[in-house]
Length: 107
Image 1 (cartoon, rainbow, N blue to C red):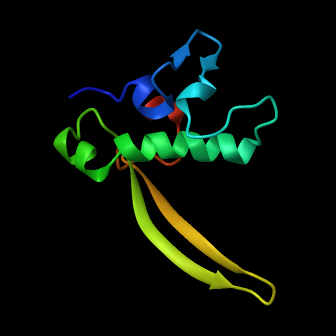
Image 2 (image 1 turned 90 degrees about the vertical axis):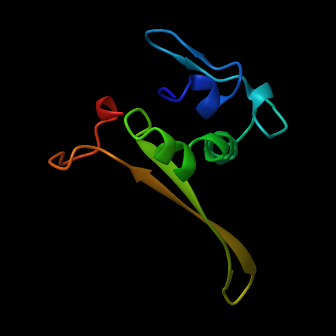
Image 3 (image 1 turned 180 degrees about the vertical axis):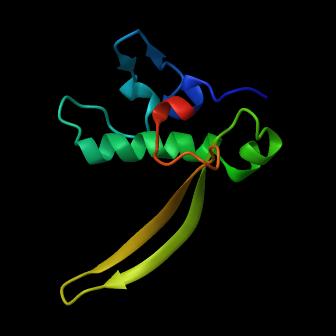
C-alpha cells in the first residue's frame, strides 16, 4: 500500500494546488447547497475518511499509514429536555515517540 490518497479522505474528485484543497461536494454524502453548514461538511468528510482510514488499513501498512479512525459506536444521552444518540469516533495519530505536539508535516 501507500500513503492514503486525497480521494480516500476527501472524495473521488478531491484535488489540491499549492494553496488550495478542493473538495467536490458531489462526492460527499449530503445535499450540496451554497449554505451547507461547517458541521455538515466536516461530518461528510469524516464519513469518507472513516471508510478508508481504518485500523485494518493501518495494520496492513504501518510504514505509510499513520492515522486511523476508530468507530466506538452509539450511546444514548438524555438531559432534561431531549434524548440524543451520540456517535463516538477516536482519531489515532501514530508518530515518533519523542514528538511532542501534533504537526501536520509528520503525516
